[in-house]
Image 1 (tube, rainbow, N blue to C red):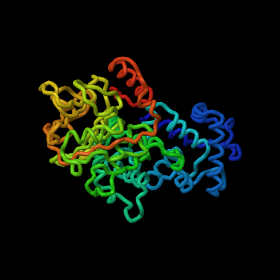
Image 2: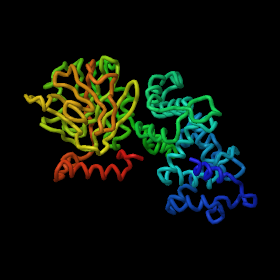
Image 3: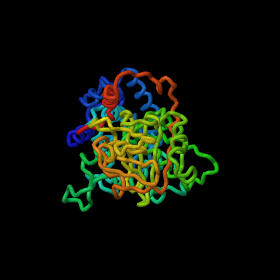
Image 4: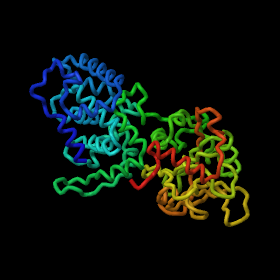
Length: 443
């Protein structure tokens, strides 16, 4: 992190002989960081940034080509304390309350066009809203509250940490705080533990990596699926809340975040495996399985392939496991094996247990729900790098839900006719995930 701190801090050194009237001319900038960041943008992009800065500066009614904190935060839809911290970082922590064109180009060059390390170091610094040099639990709580207020448009009567207390805690529970600095009494989140936290919470990482995109332009990480269910179902019965859906959707493409519809609810449809399969197989699309067990834990899995009778594992690398309560986490395929999805119906062999599952191995799944729907199990598994999802390995469901993902993609993508073995398709999927930076690795 020290390299990025040096880069940002150095950008704040004033050029004593620079004329204010030339401050927006690229040729007049002697700061090498500006020149380096400028090369990351096309000429059209730079001109657009210049026009944006000029417009915001005019709204700021400043005595020079500077953008004020209030105009900056209003344009990007950022509010205290996250907006204050972002403005502080973008202005190289000069504390002069003036955002120059040079500042904007350098910040966006690092935050949006930099290497993975540079971007994540910037975000890590962003979390230090107190500015005391560490990322403590209180910092993370402030950031999460600000995020939820922004994403879910909480009105003034609900504004603040009290409206999100339970949800904030389940996201905080995924973070590993420890004593790193004797000068601070508060435990903090190290940079490496921050990166792990982001891996477990891709929705958080996506949102925090897109704050310099105006919200009216479709800021990534803000999409929440519209949850559809029959009107005669009491909303209080439903496990999948909006914040849970946002969390699960953090790993999914935009076209899978439009609408999710309730296909099965155990309290409404009963504990019938045939009813379950009949309901969830109608659309032949991806599904989200959610279980609340008698220990109070809530967790599940995203099935990218339809639930259809097989005598062995099947599926692809788009499937994953997740936890919702008391900790929020997502566990993506590691590439360790192809044991992704399981659906066995009416088999008489003990080696082919009837029910549905994800990951692991036969009789030792990452998550398994028996065909009786009244019991199952969850074990740590290498398929998803996931731990036991509940308090104990043996689970007894209290509520089971399954949601269908209403994808907006054309039917040919669902039936793309890919040839080859499961392993060949698995390798193809892994290459795709590596390209977009979503595959798990030892990083």
